[in-house]
Structures are given as structure tokens and as C-alpha cells.
Image (tube, rainbow, N blue to C red; front, top):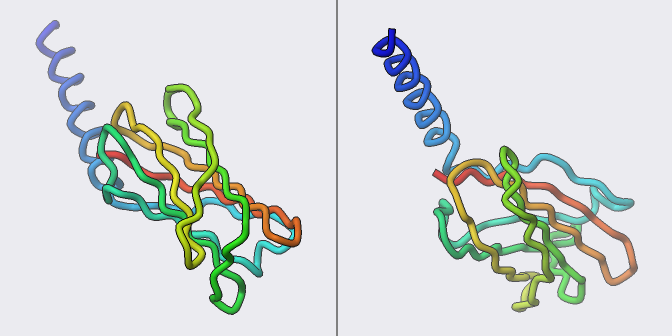
Length: 136
């Protein structure tokens, strides 16, 4: 009986690891809201890419509908694991030039993490965008 339980647990762990590994390289956009959501593009990349446990740099690019850089926005982030409350990390991103903003966080364990980006445009319009990043 104990052997069967251990075997089933091992199979479940292997399946879970394969699913997480298969999704680990993707950064998926899940929502975009705001008065001008169709007008601005907010994208997220990470360093390292794919993410791993430890320090993480969030690279946020903000463009207008013509693809031009938006250089005087206020950009903030909220980072939290989706499957387990690891404590929310919040802060403001620092402008780097050419529509790029950088923020730092810490990934404490493997699995899916939600990154919520809030961009306040120069005209006051707010754009919120959620991303899910998977850490293998």
C-alpha cells in the first residue's frame, strides 16, 4: 500500500515538473485595461530570461500607437506568485531612455508569478497590464 502511494506521488511530481518546464520560457500577457489601452503598448521582458530563483530585472517598454517611445510616464509594478502567497513586491520602475523602464524584484521559488504593470501616461491616462511569468 505504501509503495502504491509513493509511486502515485512520484508520478504526480513528474507530471507537475514537466508542465512547469514546458511553460517556463513564456511570458504571457493576460489583460490590458485603461482608457487608451488600444493606443499604447506595454511589453515586459526579464533578465535573466527565462527567470530563475534569485534577483530578477523587469524590463518594461512603453510605446504609443505609432510605435514611438513614451519617455515621461510613471511606471510601477506589483510582483507576486500566483499559486502561493509569497508576499507582494511593489515599486516604481526607473526610466532608462527610449521608452524603457527597469524594476528589480526577487523570485523566491519556482512556478508562475504575476507581474502587474501600471503606467500613468503623461496625459494622466492609466494603462494596467498583467503578465504571467513562469520560473522553471
